[in-house]
Length: 57
Image (spheres, rainbow, N blue to C red):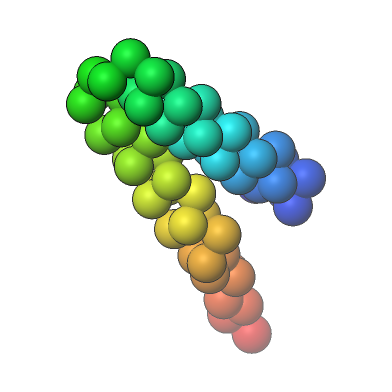
């Protein structure tokens, strides 16, 4: 995955998390809060993941 694609995915994840938190707080439905938490965790794991490929040389 290129840096641009990774950046786009990370932006999507944090926007989705924020949207789920907003809907969950307005509607009061815990499902959206849980979805927001899942999206946020995916964002943080994606932000700090180390995707360097080892060179066999």
